[in-house]
Length: 136
Image (cartoon, rainbow, N blue to C red):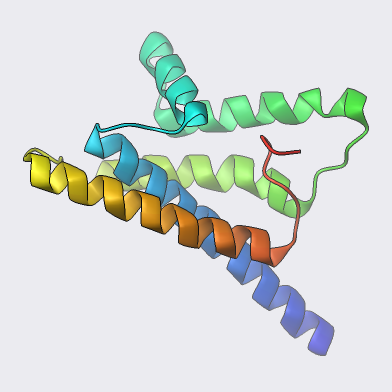
């Protein structure tokens, strides 16, 4: 019973962290004040292809996981979930998030995104269910 409780807690922590990570990405995107390098890449591909940002996150993540094959590195459940959940979460939050017009709101979105990213990363890493696809 204790094993099931621990697994449930770790999975809940993992998926909460991944969903919050996607939300943090959406806040930073909507702030239009800057992104981390991976998300600049995702944003560029999204703009060039016309595909949703979250779908690009999923496609790039899947491609990176394929590149792990020659390295003989086995992804954990968290690694695979990262690819899908973050992409879905960022698109969902972008659809719900009001447009940040005034600079004060844009700064608020950016700061909230950075803080939320830290919390989300702590939850995700703390679950110990596999590295992120870009950190393997």
